[in-house]
Amino acid sequence: EWFRYRNQVPARPEVAVKRMILTLVVVLAASVVPVSNPAAAVTSPDRPMLFGMATSDWRNQIPIFTTEAGKSPALFQTFWTLQNTHHDDLDWYSRELNTHRGLGVTTYVELTTNDLGRLVSGADDPAIADLVAGIGAWLDESPTHNLLLAPLPEANLSGAAWSGDPTGFTAGYLRVWNAFRDAGYGSDQVAFVFSMNGWSSGSFTYDQFYPGDDFVEIVGFSRINRNNPWRGYDDVFIQHMVEMQETVTRTKPILMTQTGTVDNGSGGKEAWLADMFSKLPNEDQVIGVMYFNRKKTEGVPLTTYDYRILIDGVLSPAVESGYGTWSAPTEAAWIFDGRMDAWVADREQTYRFVDSLDSDFLEDILWMADQGITYGCAADRFCPNDPVTRAQMA
Image (cartoon, rainbow, N blue to C red; front, side):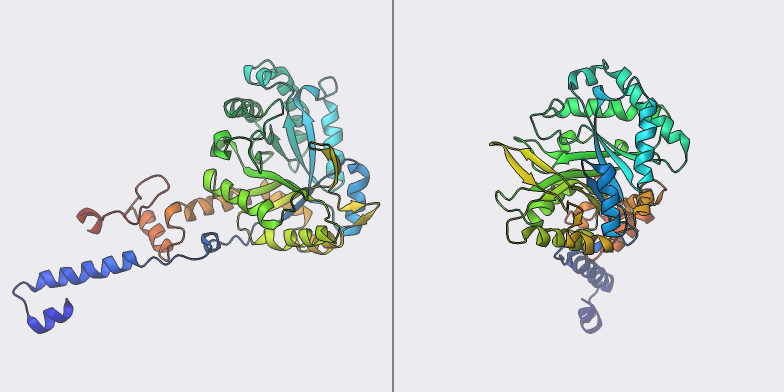
């Protein structure tokens, strides 16, 4: 159009100039080049990679692990049932949690219930009050005391007293959440974890159970390799991570809330662990993993599976080398001291428009939103293929 204007001199040259500008805008708007991995567009250099353990004989196992690995696990996973908590000895919580802290770990509690109906109806509110009082007394002892709490884990996997009921799960989760928050314990002291099973029963999806961003600090899922069939890195982690990102959140940190592997008889466990330690840090949303260091009999027919990485005082070589590259146990403080909040806020900005994450012009789109030039077509959509109005162009 510019050439025509300069050489043919039409009667209304301003029309040609307008056409030139519009052509340029259309070309730029259409020049969206997809990248192979949209997540790679966002880096998170300040997040930690935390290694945690679930182990039965933890008083002995954690010190041995610390000696063998050169540092303690960052997190320790324990399992409490609401109705079985220590109503007659609230000091038990301080003794237990101080013992965990003395071993150099931050406690991660998965809280279950014997009766979801009682929890939802409020009949178990006294038990919740005792739980809050017991944990709260320990939290009050020091500003450095904090823990992670996952109410009703793996509720998308039917079969347990608290599972298979999205509405009941959400109501029960919120009863626990409200009890702690109403007592004045914020996310800097109790970080709530939304923990699903990797595989869902029936037609359940993660988002059916999600209580909402305001009630969750960390999301996660559990997935274990039993070798029937053998599940490698992608099958155990990636497929479920994608579901969590696409149906629940692209901004909150993901903690693998339980994982583990058996051996396949030819050193498969070591290769599997090496993959986990080397590849998980490349997933920009992941902040760590809880390893199931146990030998467990489960399934139909009943089968004994040995997931342990610490056997008779000997630590897996893959763990010894891989864990050394992950964050120091003290970096669990990142969850509570405001750094995680800042990290999430930054991701909320970057992932404001989820349909434009693979655009070469993502930074420009976000700039336009910041300037108030455009707000997109929905809360989290830019709709780059929609027509542009004259007012928007102006």
